[in-house]
Length: 310
Image (cartoon, rainbow, N blue to C red; front, side):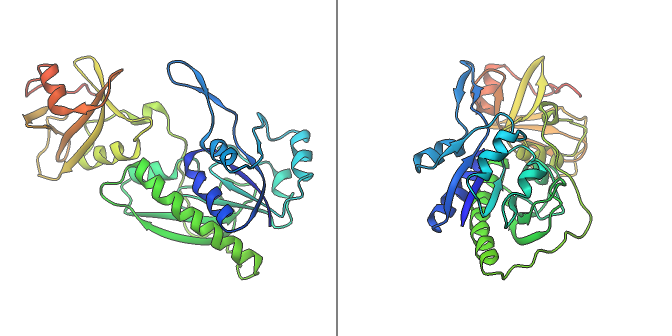
């Protein structure tokens, strides 16, 4: 099949590889424009662009995908199907109706749960035990199209948004190939979504702010779900501090919330509204990540100090 592929972040890269390995013809890769990153504000290419160019695939980076020029450009490629994997922008109706086989999206949740831009992060923040991949035929709604295939994935206790995204990207790539095979062989029947829908809006920086009046488990899930961005953060003695690694202990202890109860070895034990958060790695603002022992020593931190409330 002649495929136009829409994708931007690292999550979409395995899908490109899987399509190539399956012998599919990718006639163009559409990705978002290069962005300025870092302190030097140097232009950085999206991971999908870097990967596509390394494979000799043509790349287009339109600033606006709703122009007549862009539609005519894609129409001239005569695609059989459009594949969308974490592109980052809503595909307009005109493009949805362009290819004869429609547009297929690889979404990182078990739809209709976690429709939207950040399904992996919110599944972790909400403490889900499982998630998955859904391939669907796209329509004009937000992840509301008919389902083609799904595959469930168990969320490990040690997973964060980075590690879970990597695993789901591989599952998504495999399921995409199976989906295309099923469409080509006319063995797949699209099924309307059923059940109660939930939503996963884009994360904002303030979503990472730790509320010490939450339970230790809820804070632990926030740390997992917001790593690496925006990161779970708090303030101690006026200093902004990101919590990189921690674990929750359901020891029955309660408050006073945000108080450092014990500093021992490489552990800072903080009381919450329910249970204890045991912190083992932190990142002060503008500094590299470090073990909590080094942080506590460098700040002359004492037991009884309290993190600032929200």
